[in-house]
Picture (cartoon, helix red, strand yellow):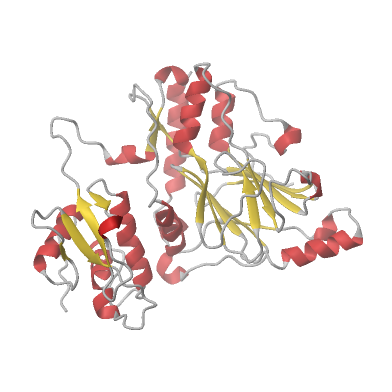
Length: 402
């Protein structure tokens, strides 16, 4: 089977994919209707016994080649990531919409169906691609906004690096794309003539053993941080680049004064937290992915329950804070229509949380996390600082570990 790979670098996904459908080069890739508004994409899972790499991964490979993400003979073949990349591109694109009711995933030749959406009204100005990572707030919300925005733009440029960071590798791609299947809600904020881009990816992380603070760190990597007991679950650095996510290791239980039996219990718990969790800040919000075998629970702005446990499933990405929602609540607060938005996140390792029957100070291991872009916003708008006794947080630019 031949691969039809257009060499034009500026070919957009819509025209590229239509060209592949029309070419007939890929088995199972075809139009679903006569009007050519719906099409099928073969979607066989790699675990199937009749899975054939050269056929079932051909389209996904072609897209990876087209985007420069795979070089034949130089890069390691990764059909799972090829498929993830195409799925993410489809879900992020404004040109396509999945039609689940017409998809067939439990048959011998499974496939998904997508609809090609009509082009936007030509009378309306085209949306600049950069605005996809920007949230808008009213100009009156930004006292001294020019200096503030310039400062953050410089921070954003600095965080980008040379393009070879961990944000370009397989792990970050997988985590980000896995979540983007749920399209973020747009915030109905008027007067979008001043843009506010989330470019400060730092977090302040406080670790507590039985309510006693054992670590306080300001993370600086745009790729977030691992909180773990052991080694980070990385991909092939020769292909995907080095991991620049900051690694925070749990301190020894002996560093805290507590009964011997409690130290032993904590040591047993830590043995199940190898690989830990990965937290990161993106323009859309704060995300987490659990890699460890030990259970992890959380509370925060987007938690489903406030009075009973919220569990993080293993190997799944969760959004802990939504930037559009936070900005919308911030604007409502400034207009006197709501309370101050929350940006505090708590993690509890090995024990159910929240647990109204057990105070936080009795939990063996907890982490308190806050994104610093939210802290600075709240301080800039004079909405009050977070109480030290509540989250042990201050706006710390030095990044000290204590």
